[in-house]
Image 1 (cartoon, one colour):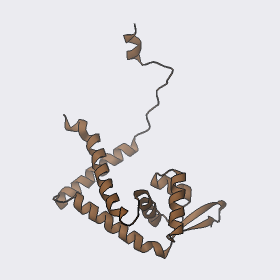
Image 2 (image 1 turned 135 degrees about the vertical axis):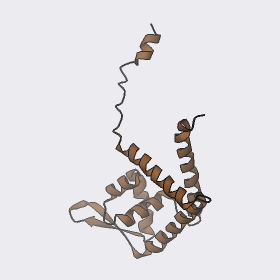
Image 3 (image 1 turned 90 degrees about the vertical axis):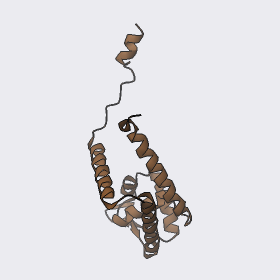
Image 4 (image 1 turned 180 degrees about the vertical axis):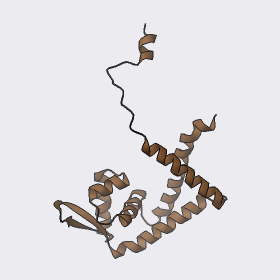
Amino acid sequence: MDLNRQLGFLLKDTTRLYTRRFEERAQALSLTLPLCRALLHLENNEGVSQKRLSELTELDPMTLVRILDRMEADGWVQRRFDPADRRAHTLWLTSKSRPVLEHIGRLIAETRAETLHGVSNEERSTLIGLLERVHANLSSLPPLARPDPDRAPEKSQRSSR
């Protein structure tokens, strides 16, 4: 099979394996990948709304609410009313979240080290650069137009003749 045709499968499977390895480590602390993602995004965006954090983490709002409820119960996150909109909350980390964030950082570093074992620094740099370029290419693409369900494709029309 042509390597160009395997790219999607290889990327997906690599992501699945990497994620599984990280989750195996995180499970020892009763952490989940979505919870770790929410904490890390919040660390870099303190004071954001729940809606914005949902967008950043790509978690649906209901899932994020459950995660935030847990983090608030554990004392890692504080919800505050948004002074500009009393119906909304802003999210803030507490000092109790710092050791958890440090541990997540170690889990990431351990998983990355295992993943890149035997890959030279130059190769790592090349890999990251190429993935960034591919990411930029995909991110810049406009959405494809959805096909009109009432309009049959040309091929189907010809084959039924």
